[in-house]
Length: 320
Image 1 (cartoon, one colour):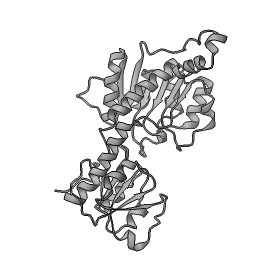
Image 2 (cartoon, rainbow, N blue to C red; image 1 turned 60 degrees about the vertical axis):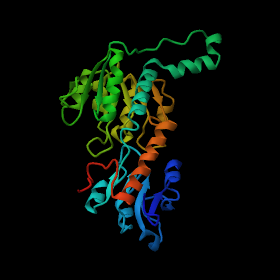
Image 3 (cartoon, rainbow, N blue to C red; image 1 turned 135 degrees about the vertical axis):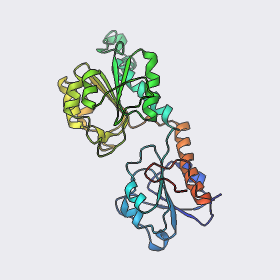
Image 4 (cartoon, rainbow, N blue to C red; image 1 turned 135 degrees about the horizontal axis):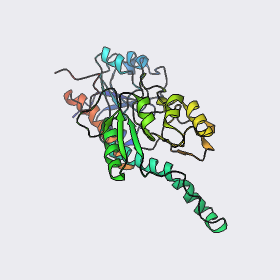
């Protein structure tokens, strides 16, 4: 049980279940999110933990002299300045594993929908066009005989790969280092993989190394029969290059769940018949988001009560 006197900051919005779990066990302080902290000094002095969904930078950390733990809602924690947290001895946690299945399921659904244009087909039916105009047009692509390359082979990437196996496609991957225990083909470079496959699934976190890694060169290598799927981070893609490739036929189709500047989506994508667009919903089911919220709360309460967390990120390990 956590110390009832402990104060927890929640900047901006977070899943309501986090607040429900913390209510009555700690003092909860809310504040608007933003690049600069906006808290009275006496309140900032009391805060020992933060539960956040989004960004939390060095300025916020430095405004909280007694901060011990930052519990991030999401498996990706690129919005948290984890390097600065480590320098201050602050533990950062995330929510891995509990969303792996949901994101992997959504990835497969997005891939099939992008290839077979199922949303457009349903719209054709709902608008009465099946009766007035006849059958929906044949989809230009199929999943049959495809070679799929995954950019990223972490927990979620491996779940996606397992789900792809029954579709009888060839599977390969590119990461910084080869995973010898996996039965899939390894590519030493992203470009080499893009040249050899015709479906590219991006599931890497947002880092300086992955920033706009999917550029015009990669898209051209994937080719006019190629399909690009992104369920990782929008920052991994040069959106201008992707839009142009879809418009001029350099790339066949794309399915996107994430964007560079969410929730803003470049206007050009909205009218493309070969783009399937989702509003960052890969993990957005009630059971999965509840599990993520529980993990955030468990990390906060575990640290405040027993100096233990369930899922610390590697950059801020708990020293025994």
